[in-house]
Image (cartoon, rainbow, N blue to C red; front, side, top):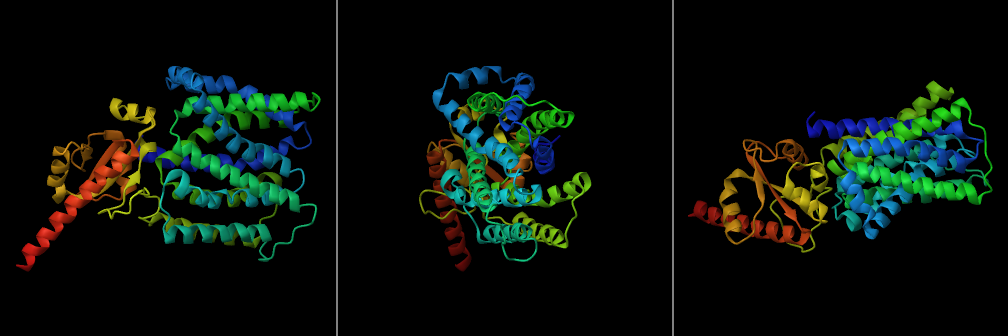
Length: 421
């Protein structure tokens, strides 16, 4: 499977597994919540070990365990993602409906806007903001049940506020998971180990009140362990790294509507007409996002105009066979890329002669065969355009593209003078 196809397949699959999660969590209502999650994470650790071993991540796990900083970051991402999307949702479903819980929590993609420029150094375009606002309007309609007026009982208000803070935490965790390009199988294993110790501590601290395990509860444990926490999270975070952030987050605005559909089929809940309005608004947002070419590009520190937008495509190379790029990412470096018309090939040679080198590939020269198609697709490169990619420290990447831009501007001005004469 091509890496581009895999990225989109992962995104769609994780979308559906995540949309089913609130429905499955209803099976755990009324049980000891700390015991439930402790058993869930304990059950999945062996399977996470198998995943890590099958991906050849044993040495990476050992390296992570010996690095306190990496462990702290992985633990933070685990708490910011797993706790909100599982513990907070289950807790909230004790007081409000699964549909309302989902509608409020899935504002997290919109809340990611707060962190994209600062954490990921990604630009936000006007069309992206419009797309996300349109999609958020769909969630707002779901939240207000089509009345455009929020009417929440006083007893529900603390839960709504709790969910909003949980959505904010999940948004931060998602952006951090893209910023720090850790080996995914190793991270999934460590995520769940950290969560097991957290809930084991809470289970003991709450008085070790053991609840019986029903058939429905056992199914919930298996689903969350294997389908959600291993397959779903692995696919979600992988697609988040490979694709433009706002494309992934905007697509996830579909999640509430899918959850409503599952609620109809599995729980017998009635789908109200305003649910269709939610789906329509989300579709409009996704269409706008699909054709956006500016948002999600790398935010340069220095305000120097570039010929074309520079993108951070580090996530595409997380499983690359290229030893040099793999080592760059391992040491905390990033991969920046920009498309350029083939007629400017001489400028690449000129910049390289000054000691600044970069990978260059076109539609004819596929130097990194599996990754290049996704990079070209992400940049929107046509057949007559090459893609220039710089792997290393982001600052050096900026210097390279700035030098490249200056050379292109110089050639363009000379050509214009020749035309005039």
